[in-house]
Structures are given as structure tokens and as C-alpha cells.
Length: 248
Image 1 (cartoon, one colour):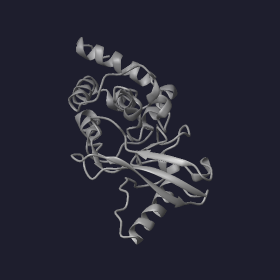
Image 2 (cartoon, rainbow, N blue to C red; image 1 turned 135 degrees about the vertical axis):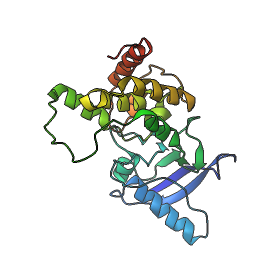
Image 3 (tube, rainbow, N blue to C red; image 1 turned 60 degrees about the horizontal axis):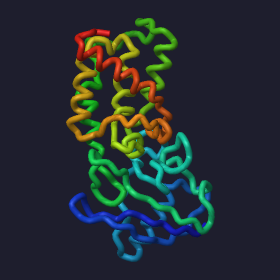
Image 4 (cartoon, helix red, strand yellow; image 1 turned 120 degrees about the vertical axis):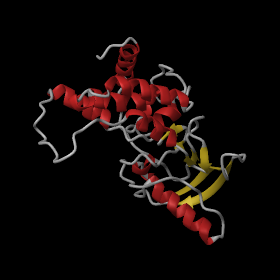
């Protein structure tokens, strides 16, 4: 299949970016990132600068493949990362627009790669639990209600890709932060630092320049792991309780 790619090119965060058009031939069985590999191989052969983009596992786990495809973070397929998107989702002759995530807290490094270290700062502020050193405890030594365990697991599936931020009109990180907070809040191991965690992670989230929750719900729609906005509601309750001095 023959495609026209309209790709955002930007040397660094300080330079002015622009779109450039490229022609590429791809197989329908290729993933989107494999198609970009083909494009870059052609650019390298022509002694041109390849398109910079992030990737690691290419299995929808690491969250690195952060890019906006035809106006949607990770593309048009629901519950799919860019690396899991395959070219059979497009038609021969299509024009595909590819650009980086647009958010003040995610400055462009180069082309399609953005700096998402602000997420790391939020995690470092409270995404941990206190444990006794020594031999690992038995997995069944602490009973946990099934509903709580499932809720914690659903929140823990967040891969920190940043699609929620890119989708939000205000560039909010509430879905990401709430998923990380609620994951640990559902487990007894997370109870020790709960109040401190909520305060610290929200404080750092604001400090890193993320916007306020817009209540649009685009974050949940675009999330490749379909994290629910119910986590945001839970975080609001936790935060209110923490600021009022509650341990709940």
C-alpha cells in the first residue's frame, strides 16, 4: 500500500517545528512503528535525517510510543497503543498526519519524541510503599477482597504513556496520577503512606505544569488501557480527606 505521511519535524524544543510530507510503501501486516522504520531506512539511504520517535517494547506495555496519529493520541483504534496499531487500519492512498503529544508539561525533544519525565517526578513523589526488608512474604499472607484487588489491578494497568494528557484540553495529568494513587490505595500495603502520597503526588503534578481536570472525559476515551475516570473521582475524595486531616 502506498501512503503519504505528513510528519511533524522539529530539531529541538527551542526550534520552530513544521510538517513535512513523505511517500512510503508499507505492507498491511506491518505495525505503525514498522512502517516508520521503513520510512527511516529510506531517509538514511538518501542521506537524510531520519524521523525521531520513541519506542521500546513494541508490545503495548512500556508507553513509549507516544504520538498523535490523525488527530488522536495513539491513533483511531480504541484501547490500542501506536505500536499495536497495524497498517491494515488504513487504506491504500491514505494521507496520515503524525505529530508529537501537545502539552506544556511534555516539551518536544525532537520530531515525535517528547520529554515525559514529569510523570517520573509524580511517581517519585509518592508511588512507593514501605516494606520490611528480608525474605519476600507469601503472596496469600494478606487477604484482600476480590473487588478491591480487581480495582487495584485495573488502575495498575496504566502504562504512563501520556495519552490522557495529550487528549485533555487543559493538558491534565489527573487520570495518570489518580490511577497510580488508587492502585496503592486499594491495597493494605499502600495504607501507610496514603495521606502523604496523595498530597505529594498532587503537589508535584501541579508543580510540573499540568492543567486542571477539564471533565471532558477524553482521557478515558483515548487511554490505550481504558483507565476509568472513576479513579479521578476517587483521587478527589482522597485529596479532600487528606487536606482535612482524615486518614481515610
